[in-house]
Structures are given as structure tokens and as C-alpha cells.
Image (cartoon, rainbow, N blue to C red; front, side, top):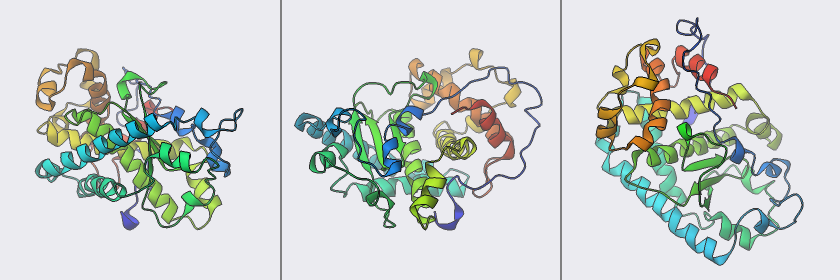
Length: 318
């Protein structure tokens, strides 16, 4: 995104209009913290190994069966997402924010470029390099690749309202993906897009870091407000995309304090988005943030509405 920035600019003084009183339905989100720390040894430049057993296979499955299965899962994600973006280009072009329209299209370019990465299957890469040291490889200025690690089952410690199919860990540029991906499920595509934006954010941090320590300062050393702001940008990308798929229903939501998520009628939204009742928790999460986002008129360039930034910060914890 060049000099525009990807969710790392500081918003101006935030508005207090809708936060003068407590939020009726305080939804506390804990987004992907478990996997963000999964490879924490990487930030110290140490091999990616378990603390007690000095063998990466104890932490990651590098069996031939796992590698072969991951190849198929990765291909499903890549082809499914590229096809999704291409077939819905007309809808994406209707996104009113030029910044987020361009950002979403860039995620498809990222997937296309990385599809040629011979090392994209992290299990295979670990099998080839069991003594992996991350200190130099992943701080290279030539940012063109990232890894996938395919895993079965749900991501633990992630509430249903934000349960995702993917999670990205910046230190070693590994995206953890579930082995169940439905290319026809819009929320599966949105979850994948969310993490691809985190890859692009990491790209920018690396481009703008002259030293390893500077990069660590920006990405690895815990900063709750910075993390929240990065997540706010990915949340807006979700909102903008789902808004055009819902024929503008999200931007027509009432004032945030007039929304009762417990009694909200999801019938029409589920039908338009071709989703089921099991997807309602995720949609509740989207609606919670879409209302304050559109209430202030949406993004202006790469700057998010002050109200939305503050609201997101208030109801989100890490």
C-alpha cells in the first residue's frame, strides 16, 4: 500500500458521542492470542522447537501424511479465494472506500504471488530444515512469501463470535489454517481475507524497519493499542466487503444505541449472504462494529472514523 499505511497510522482525537454511557451489550473479544504466541521463540531468534523436546515435530506435524494433506488444504484456500475475488470483482468495485477496495484486491494478488512459493507448506519446510533458525530469513527486505500450517479442528481459546478459519503469526510469517474450508461460505472467505491483511500489515512493518530491533519494537513487543488499531483495519475490511454482499444492509443499520443484538432479526441478512443460523454469532460481531463505522460516514482515505476506533478499542481486549 506504499506510504498510505496499513492500520498503523494514529487516529485523530476520538469522539465520545456514543461512549458517554456504558454499552448495553459489552462483547469482549479475544482474537487469536493463542496462535500469536505460538511461535514466540522466533522473536528471540531461536529455533522453532518445543521447550522440553528439542524436536519441531513435537510442536508441528511434519509427517508425510500431514504434508500431503496440507498441500490439498492450501490449494483449496488459494484457488477458492482467488476464484472468489475474481468472480465478485463487480461487487468489490462497489465498495465506496477506495482505500479498502484496493486493499481487498491486494489480498488476492498476495495469494497469487505466494502460490508460487515452493516453501509455503510449513510442515514440509520444517521437515527439510529441522534446525530452523528464524533470525535472518524472516527479516529479509524482499517480502514475497509466507507459510501455511494446516491444522484440523477449531482454534481453541477463540470465542464463537469471532471464530475464524485462519490466524497469522508475524515473527515467522506463518498462517495457521483449518483443514475445513468451504469456498462457498462467505464468512470462510472473510476470515481468510482478514489474515491476509495482517500479512500485508507485516509487509509494511518490515519495509519500514531498518533493523531487526526496530521491527521487533513494532510487531513483537506487546502493545495493546497498536494491536487493536491493526485489528480495527481488518474489521473494517470485513464490514466493507459484507456490506456490498448484503446490498448495503450494513450501512443502513440504525444508530448503535438503537440496536439490540439479542433481538435482531437476521432472517433477511442470512438469506442475502447465503448463511445459516450457525453463522449468527459472527454476524452479531460484524453488526456490533458496522453501525458505529457507518454512523460516522466510513473511512476517509486510510483514516478510520474516530467513533469506530474508540468503540472498537473499548469493547475489544487482547
